[in-house]
Length: 295
Ligand SMILES: C[S@@+](CC[C@H](N)C(=O)[O-])C[C@H]1O[C@@H](n2cnc3c(N)ncnc32)[C@H](O)[C@@H]1O
Image (cartoon, rainbow, N blue to C red; front, side, top):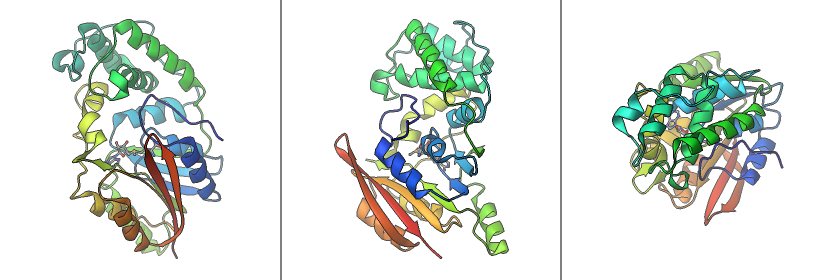
């Protein structure tokens, strides 16, 4: 089983699911990933002959790609704990965030390189209560120790093979363009699309609900509002993502969310032939992997 990239995010894919995804991506050279996340599935699928084009609205993903996966060496400005008054200090986006942690976050957000912010993002996640991104649960020494630990860890993920083309932004914003170009050429735009979209728990996706403050801290409050996914718009967006011009599709879903997996499966069947449906059990829920082909 391949080693999985970790940043302290709770939930997320299990190693078995990643291995299955890698197997299903075999032979695909150009791959589209509309929702990159922390790039976990991307680095697993990357080979010397692959070009993987991805999108994500969170700045953290951009830092991981530029500072770690695409970088051949570490570039850092952090040589100790420094403080600055900025977005985190002024706004205290996490409950119980103290002056010193806020000041360090602001210093790195203003002076840090993408590599530094990639390490800080992970240290911040691990400094919240149970990694849930809501309540702060750390002092600055602990935060800095986690930053240093992730720095060591991220070193092993530099220089990923193949070509990684990452866009910081909304996948659906540039979508029509990619789509119509492929249509005009009368060809597939990619060999494979891997779709692991936000899932709606109760009324919202977790990203717009709990990661907005995270994105605001890393961008000094200059980042965009993260897109909101809910019970009403999710199926339409999943459907739209399925229209990417690729003959092979991997679609990841999960239990205990809305729309229900049965309904998502029906929608998928309208866009291709479901060749495989895998179930991965973990922490009381089931993740589903669908593999489709179309001609
Ligand atoms: C389930 S995660 C993807 C995890 C990914 N498979 C991995 O291996 O790390 C979904 C991601 O979609 C991003 N997202 C949500 N709406 C988006 C949009 N409209 N365009 C691009 N990314 C979006 C979120 O920021 C989140 O990182």
